[in-house]
Structure formats: structure tokens, C-alpha cells
Length: 279
Image (cartoon, rainbow, N blue to C red; front, side, top):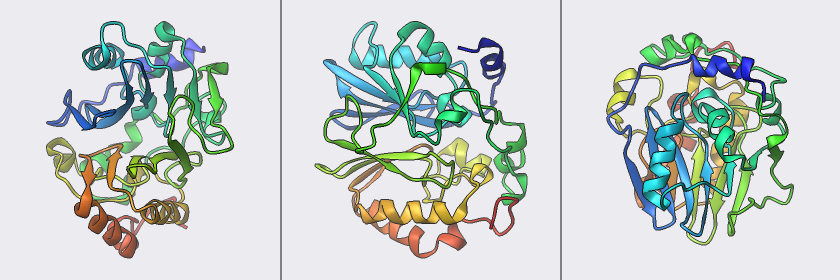
């Protein structure tokens, strides 16, 4: 692992913490959603074995390990880590966790260059929204990390290692290799940032976790045509429950109606009128 590069993350700190930070929700008996500052990660499974989805913000490794110990028992460690994508708030504690765990990491093949030190993400675009989070987004870390050969591409057949009954779905737009996870048996969706349930550009709404359907965070989304196609793809699955990368879980008729609204009004609700990345 390239510690010199990854130390940039260790020096990063985002001085924003929502009212939900440190709170976990048992969305289903084997699906747990935990909020770290302003981002959600998920643990899927039970004490016999579980998978961690994303690794939160920088400097959160101890908090994540404590959360997992409370959920699964002392010294709990996942069978694997699956990444929805590689933005700093989703892989912030990955390097530190791997120093102790040494477990396999899986991501889409198009996302691996950002996780192996080959590419950096474009910087945040402050022109997308008047909200304060959007305005300060150029200050957020946009560099990739490097975990070397510890990351593997997800299987081409759509299965997810150590997650029986789940499949991964390529949902690009926010990033090239962004994925979501879906379990058809109970129509449970782990979205990542393909869409979120809080207006992520607004500091007030992020801190208060005001529930509101939204597209992917605008300041980091680089392909809005692909983002729209991804939202339509997820709506077509008719999910019953959704855990998003930002905001509270949503389910039932509330989810169905909000997703329909988002698809029907994507340009007005999600896509910025001005963006350096808008086609």
C-alpha cells in the first residue's frame, strides 16, 4: 500500500457531522445501516459472517470497528468489503482498516484505477448549486487511494462474493464504476450515491438529515446522461427498501412514489442547470 499517497486522506477532515452520526438502523434483520458523520455504510449478514459496504470518512476506522463489535461481537471483521465507488467519503477509512483486517475488497473494474493509485477524480464543482456543501466541494479530497492488489473486480456474472442472493448493478454517472446492490428476494437496494434521500448540496439539510429524494450529489457527478439512466434502471427493479449513501433509508410506498417522481422530473430535481460536467 502506498502510504505516502494515502496519508493525504489521514490529513483530511470534513468539519460536518449530521444529527444522525453514530446512529445505526437495523433496516432488516441482516441489513444494518450506520451513519458516519454525513455518509452511510452498510453491514450485510450476521455473526456467522457479514460483508461491509463502503468504509466511511477518513479517521473513522476505530468508530467503524466499535460499531461492528456492537453489532456482531468482539473483534468482528467482515468476510469482505464491497465498494459502491471510491470517493473519499466512501473509502476514507479503507487503508487503515485493511492494515488490521487484510480482507478482500471488491469494486467495479472501472473504479479500480481510482483505488489503485492510477487515477484521481475530477474536483468538486461549486457551480452546481447555491448550497454551502456544493460551494466548498473543491476543498474535498478528490485524489484516488492505492490499496494495490487487495482490490479485485466484482464477478462478471453479477454475483457478489460472500453475499448470497445479492447481485451488483452497474449504475454509472456519479463515477464511471459506481455500483448498487440488489436482493430480489425482498427487493432490498443498497444504492450508494446513484440517488440519495437528502439534498446533499445543502449544509442545513445534510446536518439535519431532512428527508428528500435527490439525484446523485451534484458537485461530484460527471456524467448526467448516465446518472439518469442509472436512476431509471434502479426504479425498474421496483425496490421495497433502499439504503442510500446519504440520507435516511426509505421504503414502501414512500420509496415508490419518490423514485417515480425523481425519474419523471430528473432534470428539474437532480440535474444542475450549470455544471462544468453537464453535457
